[in-house]
Amino acid sequence: MHHRTVGELMTRPVVQAPREMPFKELVGLLTENDVTAVPVVDGSGRPIGLVSEADLLRKSAGQTDPSGLLPVPRLEAWERAKAEGARADALMSAPAVCARPEWTVVEAARVMSDRNIRRLPVVDETDKLLGIITRGDLLRVFLRHDDAIRDEIERDLLRRTLRLAPSAMTVDVREGEVTLNGSVEARSLIPVIVRLCRSVDGVVSVTEHIAYGTDDTGGAATAA
Image 1 (cartoon, helix red, strand yellow):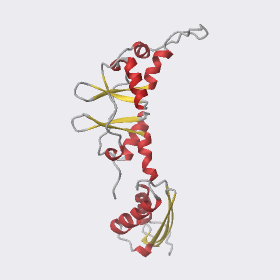
Image 2: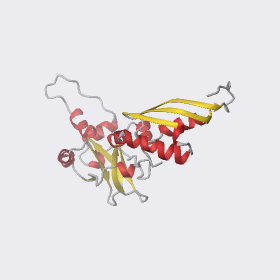
Image 3: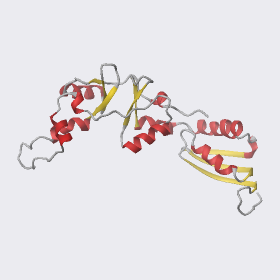
Image 4: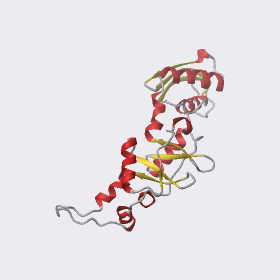
């Protein structure tokens, strides 16, 4: 089974900013390239942080309201430092949380979820910037055609991996939702099949209607 990697899904080349880039140039960089964030790199091309639209907006949010209607915001020290920053290295969110190109979609998604971040710079073994992966990039695996998902399950999973006869199982895939019908010899094989199907790129859900001949799980014996 082939799982799509970060290296296959990432955007490259990636728009990046040197640490000394001034505020106005950063705004122009985001606007001209139609992106919402860029990695900030050191002189060796290694990401040290990211500057996003949210980081840049702190400069406006930290200012006094010209109309005088809004109270002066109370900012934490780090928020004030960003609001007063003039270069990328003062405005960025740091340190940069990075991914490796060999990571799977699951690995990258878990890091984004755990850290509550929207994107990850992708670096090589020397930590130099290769590309960037976003939440949207990870979701692209769910755009796989149903036929491709079904073929992978039937060919790579059921036949090559589990050595099941083609007549043992039918696989229906609609909008990424997999339905399995058939029978197996041992009951313990059913959760294995379901788990492997769920790991296939593009699968949204798995429903099984699988009978079994022998209950080898210690439960009540039921003939298929």
